[in-house]
Length: 95
Image (cartoon, rainbow, N blue to C red; front, side):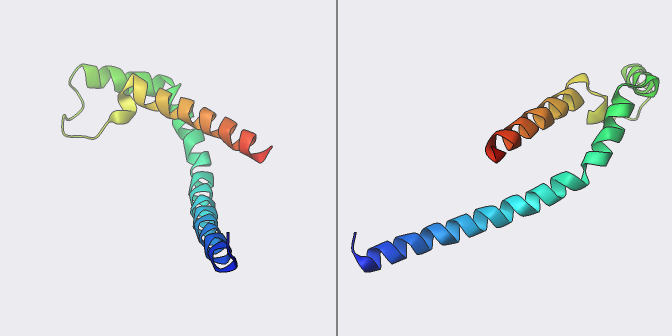
């Protein structure tokens, strides 16, 4: 690889890596800010209140036009599983 090609190629790597690091930093900041809220969601999801809300939805007592993915049994479970997987990935990358 000639000098100009090498410098151009390395400059592309620098630009790509700078963008990736910046994007990840922003994403981690956002991720960090929702961790306390995620704990609130876990507490709700494992509570009797969630069960009551779930049962009321099943009985048609909750308006059908209300966004209520939190009352699905899978949505929160999948989020928690994805969150656990993401933490494992971050640990592996840190090593």
